[in-house]
Image 1 (cartoon, helix red, strand yellow):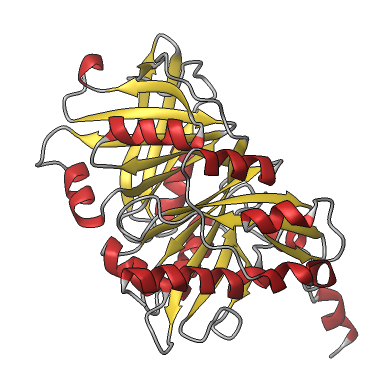
Image 2 (cartoon, helix red, strand yellow):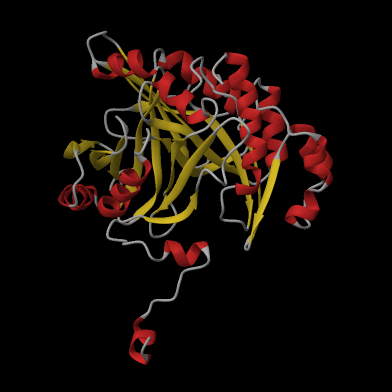
Length: 386
């Protein structure tokens, strides 16, 4: 190699921040604006997320606001907004989505400065349009929104709300029921994981690179993510400031059916597998969730906690409550994280939630994969799907 070559060679990114900085940041994203679920009964689903997860009522849209096709309830905790939408007639896109997939995530909405530019830029780069830019207005101001398809039938909506002061969006009214269970300490969406079909991970990764300007900051293959029975592959995609992270999972060959294959079978296609939500006190949050009936995966064996500090180093938390609750711990060069996963929150073994607390670490718990997937496989076996 010549001296000139040496000068022009870009140093390899090592930290997560260095990798994130390599993204093509033509599409500035300020974070997750909301996550919209299409569900069979939005009123009852809203009650569940209020009662079990402590989400607070924010806004409503439906027949009482002049909408004839659907009803939507908006809930919020910290910076996390959930929109729960149900069809009012059987011959609608929403009803067909629920019939095929069950309750599931339809829209991953991203908060942007310019929804028109976001649409134009992504369409130019090959995105399939879902919603051309449109302006919504009411007495509280205006919102621009647009949307494109990502994997499966999932949509990224771009939301520009800098000129809006209302509760959620024009067309919604403030929703203030008397029933308001206390929040449980959830703060923001850390990441959302998508499951795609066989040989679909790399094309999906390329789509995020080419269309969204994202960068692959972490990769796992079937040699890293495997158990005695199954395996999967995963790549984590991030935008240029790290505010939007989308790990993409694909099944891998194994002796038995993997958790990704089970998801694809019961969701009947590609879609959002889990939503990771952050907290500053995972022990307190998990205790509150358990007290409200949220079920978590089975805790790992005692040996997992006996050598915990030897594996991850010293941590601030007492190990006893972590073991009691089944909270997992992993570390990277920048710190450590604590995480735990719920069981599927619906009858189909599809969508679940991850509760995560980061103490410096920017990784995704690779050291916990074996314990986690063995716990998932125990649940699969109970369902007869392993």
